[in-house]
Image: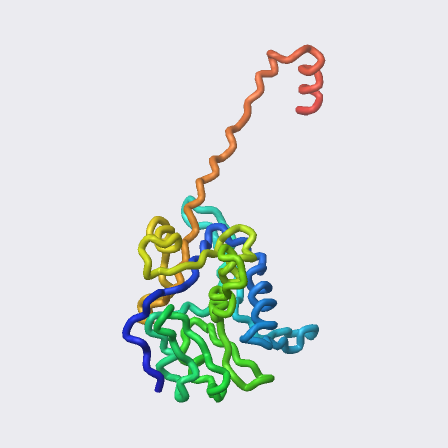
Length: 244
């Protein structure tokens, strides 16, 4: 089984704001476009125009309808899901070939397609459903945090971010080093109470989710009263006709 690094110099990950995610799927499409043509490609589609289309997607967005609760109105919650690059990922420790591994320099969890045998042990071990099997290649794939993009010196520094972060129209996604307490993602996570996903499992996911803010209760509209005696004569006559 594959060993994990004792520590990592960085903890690169995503900060996702569930309060402003609109479920547009721009992140998922941008992710697929970039990775399909890059080092992680291809990302094949299965029965793309059939009754049950599917395929290899590193990022998926799920939408849930939330019922009204107390003074909080009913709402729709959009929940993006991808690899969380856990500090102690079960998907790595169960890998029999070492194909699934966690990098010591930045904490990114990757899969080496040259040594992956497609046994799917990692997908069974991952409780977040973040592993994708490519039937055309017989190997497992997953989010790489666009590792071939974030370190590319040919790209302007401001654009050295995962494709999903660059594409988000509402800026609901952030990227940075959670090991740095002064990084933008760390500061925002502290201020907004960033949540680790399923912490009871002990895998210590690096990605954080910002919970939706409380909605301001909508006051009931005040009942309007009309003093008909103050109306002109023509309107008082019209009011009597319409009130019959």
